[in-house]
Length: 263
Ligand code: OOG
Ligand code: MG
Image (cartoon, rainbow, N blue to C red; front, top):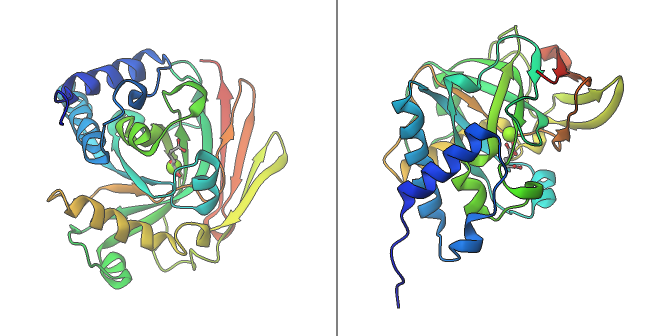
């Protein structure tokens, strides 16, 4: 028997409040064990409308859990997507902890599109032909769930843990380097704490864009020209604390440095 319909709008407001107040919350699935993945994406989309209504425009998408290491560390075995809004992009090199709960950073490759991408059977060629440029990126994830612990449905409803992101100063031609062979090392306070290569992302980051297009196509959505796409963590995410200095070496895509400060 179908139980009472879940008020998805109310849940979107609940998630939004906890994001804005940087207050951790219980897993939604504890109270709503019947919450489906479709419901969770609907909550995410309603959250996007709330952000849009306060002027926080959507500027792109992120893929998450595209690497085996990341899937294993959180116990969710499939890729997910989330929405990126204007207020998440940080232009300086300061990661301020105020407004965040228990942030982690992870190195990623960002694609910026020049053409629309739509469809469930796109090929790598389609993606490259529609790509304007690529950039090294650092994503800051900050699950609103206690202990960063969630199910697939929970993390999707929480906009795939999105909180902030930094893009490198230098953009590159999509053909600059082989992204699957690109070595990446993450340094915290001068020591390497994570390393990997672009191949960790579904074999090649371009596949992450194919997967995103396929997933949103089911809802009739497409990737718009000008949008930025974070293709997913290349290594495990690392906790950051006040005073940390973070440096990511992206090989021929250069280095990015961030100072972590309380406010
Ligand atoms: C989910 C988001 C993961 C990525 O790049 O894999 C993600 C999480 O681990 O909290 O952004
Ligand atoms: Mg990520």
